[in-house]
Length: 141
Image (cartoon, rainbow, N blue to C red; front, side):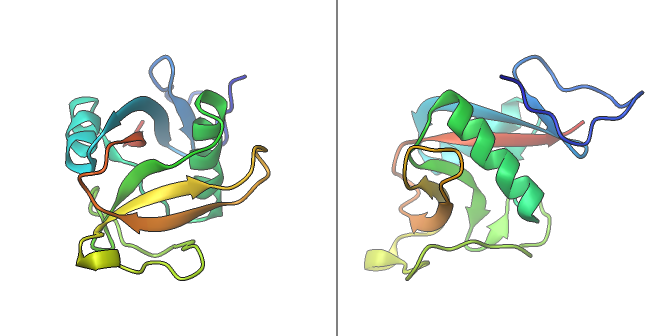
């Protein structure tokens, strides 16, 4: 199943395996890496760990994870509540009690899942940046 939002005639396309949404391409990388290594990997692909600015971005990130993995946590591009792509941190969907900076060393942003359906909510949680997780990259078309 391929999901594409915001594609119009004449609009540039994403590389094979990426999902297009409103001028950005997204891909889920199932290889678990630390947050810094995941960001480096996304940069090597021409992007950054995904930033989320509104509900549409949020839904796209949920879907690219669900299509490949189903449920479970994944890194996205927030650290110390800034996006690595330099865009404003103007949207959030923290889980209850999050961020909590547990033991003073949770500075990176994961999106975590509940349930086994794409309609189930996926919330944000802060986590130790050295925890290996799969991740979502995004880049401009």
